[in-house]
Image (cartoon, rainbow, N blue to C red; front, side):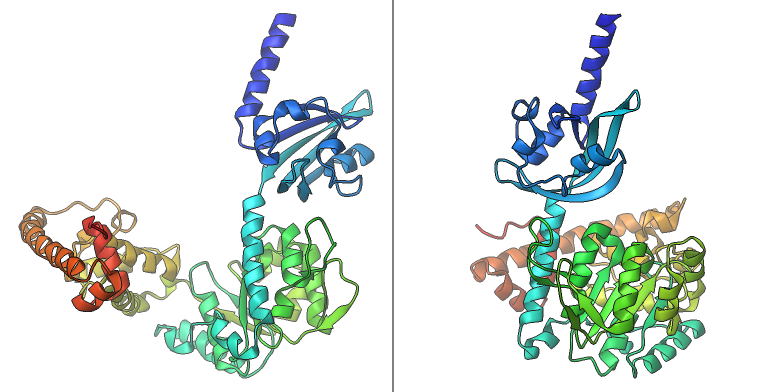
Length: 473
C-alpha cells in the first residue's frame, strides 16, 4: 500500500508541475512544503530555493497584512481571486491573481494552499497605458484635443432604419447638455461610436474623451484606474491620476458597466453625486467636472434583477436612455452599410470593388448577424483578404463560410471561376513585376514606391505581403 501511495504522490506532483498555474503549499509556520514549476517560473526562483524555507525569507516585500497566505492562516477563511503584487528575494516584481485556501486537520489549521495566475505582463501593459493617459492629462490644453480618442461624429453613423434614426435624434438632443447618458444595445451595434458623436457635438468637444471597458480590467485594478492612486497605497503604487481626473472638463465613457464590481459601483455613485474624487490611498479629495456616458450590452432591467447593477446607480445614470437596435432588426441598412465598408476597404487594400452581387447581398440579408455591425465589417474585411486583387464584384463564393452555411458552387460558377483564375494569374504577375520594378527604382523605399504607383502606403504593404515580395535586395 505504501508503494501505491508513493506512486500516487509522484503522479500527483507530476500533474501539478504540468498545469499552467502556480501552486504553492505552506505549513502553519509559513514553511514551503510544495512549490510547482509554474510558480517557480513566475517568481523567478528555483524550487530548491523555496521548498523548506520560510515564506517571508523569499518574499520580503510581503507582510502579515498584505500576504494572502498569512491572512488565510490567521483567519481560516479562504480568499478567492485576489490580486497581489510583491517582490521576490531576487528583486523581481510580480503581480498575480490568487485563490488561497486554508488546510484543516481535526479542526485545526495546518497550512494553506495558494493557486496563482501570473498577470505581471498584463498589469505592466495597463501601467503603460495609464502612463500615456497621464502624460496626456499633464500636457498643455492645446495638445489635448488632438490626443482625444473621439474620432466619430453623427455623420459617421449610417442607417435609415426608423428605430435607429430615432435613437440618433435623441442622441443629438442629448449632446446639448452634460446630463448622464446610458446607451444600451447588443455587442457590435456601435455604442461607443454614439458616445463619441455625443461628445464631439457638445460643448466639451475640445476636451478629452476617455473610454474604458469595465470588463477588460480585473476589479482589483479597476479602482486605481478609475479613481487614481497615491504613492504608497500598495506595493508599487505611484501618484497617478485616475480616469475622472484625466477626463476633467471632458467626457468619460464606461462600457459594459454591468461588469463593474458592486462596491466600485457604490464609489462611482458617490463621485457622480458630489463630483469629488479621492485617489486610492490618498487623503484629500479633488473636485472634477466630467460628463459620464455609460453603456451596457444587456437589458438594464435584467442586470438589476440579477443583482449585477445597483438600482441607485442605474437611476443616477439613466437620465437619458438610448437603445441601439441589433442589425437583425435593421435589415434595410445592410446594403448601405455594405457599400460603406466596400468604400473603406477599397481604400485600405488598394482594390476597386464596385459592389456586391444580388445573390451575395441576399445572403447577407438572410443572415442573423449575432455580432451585428462589427461582424458585418469583419466579414467584408475577410472577403478582401481572400479575394483576388482584380475582382470587381463580391459574389456568393467570396462570402465567409459562417454566412454561406452549406453553400455549394454551381457547375457554371466553377467554369467561370476557372476561366477567371487563368486571367487573374496573368494580371497578378504583371502587377507583381510592376511593384518589384518600382521598388528597385526607388531604392526599396516603400513610401516613395507607393506614391509612384498611385496607391496608399498601407495598400502597398498589403500587396507586398500578398505577393511575398522581399522589400530589400
